[in-house]
Length: 206
Image 1 (cartoon, rainbow, N blue to C red):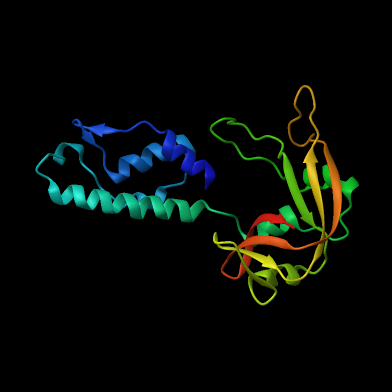
Image 2 (image 1 turned 180 degrees about the vertical axis):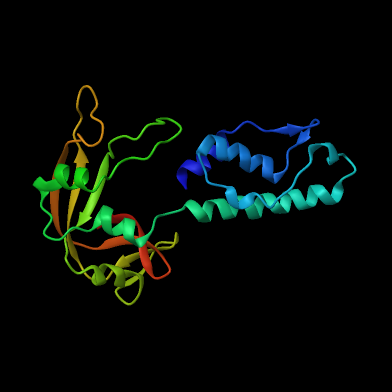
């Protein structure tokens, strides 16, 4: 989501016949900048030649659609699935010395961004060291409580975790040759974002 907001604020305004463009053109521009999958917008039809100063109704529809469609785009790309969360953040009997091996084996990488259009080494990743995945899933239910005002939840139980920090290499390493230094921490309460009753985003631990 952070990448999308960055694209929203950094994009150049589009114009059609001297007027601000429609919601669709905004999102098509976002698709180019942010590599978003906006194929669900194909139902929308916009003909630039029909856009005029007298099209008050079209303007109102365009503004309303802009809000709805951008919201839909944000919802569709925020977070990840529970399966992806399991792969990136849960490993039974995880130790600090396993960071490089596990991250390479699970193909955990930093996706392309505007600044760096190539796949690169992820700078930081945390593993919850447990074989009880249901205890982690329960954070989104009775095993957790609201945390802050941004929709996060924090676990009521504590877990051991391993924080993996990328080791600087010169020249910079690329996957799967990333090297990490791990730090084991005990009794950490896990902070996550949930969707459909399951964790999809690891926010941190405390």
